[in-house]
Each structure stands twice: as C-alpha cells, then as structure tokens.
Image: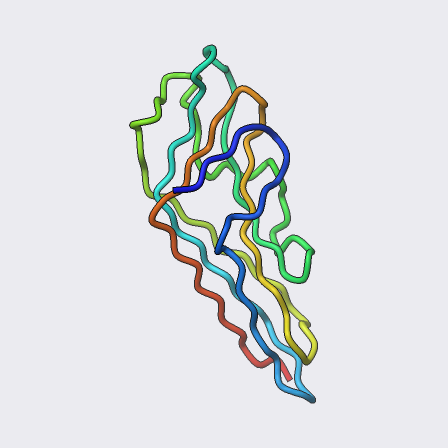
Length: 132
C-alpha cells in the first residue's frame, strides 16, 4: 500500500514503466490505471476534498490533462475513513508520440493538505497504437 497526504504530486512507487515506439513511426499511447483507494481526513471534517491521480508520459500530463481537478476518490465531505476502500480507474492518452523510449508514470495527490490518500492493489496497463 502507498499513502500520501497533501497537494504535492508524488510518483507512485513502482508505478512507472516504459514503452518503445519503433523508428519511423508515431503512436498514440493509451494508459489505464486501476486501484483500490481510500481518501479521508483524520484531523477534521474537510468539506469539498478529494484525491487525484494523473498519468504522465515523458513528464507531461496525458490527455485530458486536468491536474487536481480529476476526482479519483473523494472524502465524501469528510465522512470517509481509512477503512472505506473503493475501486477506481483512470484512462489517459497522448497522440503523436515519436520514435524511441518513453516513460509513463502514475502520480497521486489530494486537493487539500489535511487529506490522506491510500492506494493498494493497483494495475497500470500501457499500450502504443501505431499512428503512421
């Protein structure tokens, strides 16, 4: 299990892989991430708080790039606890990826500092579809 708190994006340990696009081609990279998650606050009831996941391809957020605006899980206005695990998913893509090796990374963060975000039993699937 991986846990984080706060609004700073953190790379998920082990949540990085690479994919290679053949010479002379471009590709669309499609990345899917699924996980069991818990999003909660132990300190206070935090209204309007949630936990986010984003997927980077070569350090650039894949599309649609929404940053903290993507709600992967929520505290349910402070009602959720550390034992309220749920299954969630995100899928993102990048078009026009050129030849060579490319790194895909999953990152996690909360939208408020008093929120804790736990991820467990996760899966990352990355595919490249030849565009030209």
